Amino acid sequence: MSLFIDIVSTLSIVGIWPRYIEPYLVRVTELDWDLSPEQAHLDGLKIVQFSDLHFHSKFQDKFLDRVARRILRQKPDIILFTGDFICYSQLQEAEKLKKFLNRLHAPLGCFCSFGNHDYAQYVSRNSQGLYDVRKPTSPAMGICRAIWTIIRNKPEIYHITNEAASTAHHEELCKLLHETPFTLLENTTVTLPIGLNVTGLGDYALGRCRPDTAFAGYNKKYPGVVLSHNPDSFPHLRDYPGDWIFSGHTHGEQIHLPFMRKVSRKLARLENPNLTRGLFHERGKRLYVNRGIGGHKPFRFMSPPEVVIVRAKKSG
Image (cartoon, rainbow, N blue to C red; front, side):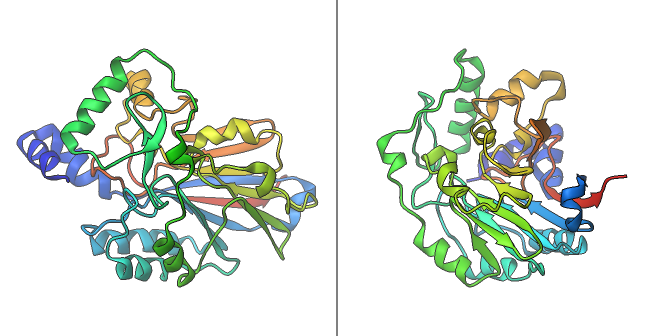
């Protein structure tokens, strides 16, 4: 899949960094959670989020080890993964993926939600902008699609084909997760004994993001964190509880062009193109859009892989 990108990058000096160096530079982003007096019981809590692993058969053991060490070095109390364990719904080298996930432990638990690559069929936007069941594209076709995305002057809308909406769970992936420390949360909430809700939503692109169901078991006495792969779900969660919403999906634009933000945001194909990366505040909620770890195409520019650590501390 990446041979075309390898050749082009090798022949171009400027292509060496985004192809062979930056995709393997795992950065740690540190965030503070300033607790209100009612939340003071969470003082000292450490939450690690990572996202978009996009595991495949050519994943380097050395890189997986680096990611695991970055996560465990933070000594997290909770680990959250916000979707896209695999690429294009293809579970390759299951034992290798399971071994990596089994390295990750946290005393209060490891929780995950699914992304659009994690169901029985891969769902993404088609050329008309609809969420549809798709086949993997070649790098050359991917470049053509990117150019078309840039030049077409139409905002992205939310519409799902019947085939995408009827996509089932990925049974093999679900079975694998049962053999790891990770608990899949799809439209459900668990309340931890320390007094914290953890809510996971199904993927927005498949029409599985169902907050009415997800928050039905939410204990409103306590604060909460929410896992939702696609940041386009954020506007739909404004009237629901939860202090932090963690997302991924965009890879931080993957090719991030600070001097051409309109272009790089457009490539993410969000309905809300401002939500492609970083921290957002709205109505007392925080959304963090993680740049992710991997990618279905091994190419990053000014958007290195990311592990996020959130430290809760009492105000004042």
